Image (tube, rainbow, N blue to C red; front, side):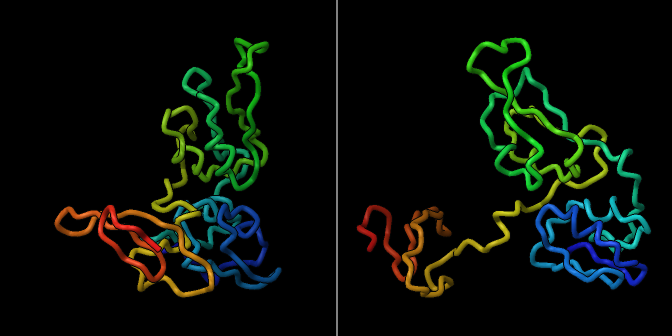
Length: 195
């Protein structure tokens, strides 16, 4: 269930500007709308709302906060491997790789967060498998789905519409443990040639 903007909205556009998935729209001084198919339930829009006009997925009004009080992502340079996952996922380009602070002359780089554009969406935290970046005392939610997963990945060939393009081949486990390869329009058992 996505977040919802109530009629208390003053049309200031802050939620639209801060949304990490660009899924809020509206016109100045009018009621804004969160499009449910794009909402990742992170809560960023709600904490930035100056009039607390946004309900969470449970129908509860979320109290907005002053931007200076919203915690920003931090990096533990001892755990960071410089993989760039956080750099790639950040919708506001506030993460970059810099030389390691203890070894500035080496080729080894680590992530660094620019706190000014950071909205505390925590997408960087989700993709980091080394626990090297996180938001301390978070007030936003970890998204249950990543932005790139909002586009539905086909689960079977009949769900893929023929758009003149060959669908990417992927593998999944069938009930009973059998593995199958799938493309748009082709199904074959494991090991068979896929067209």
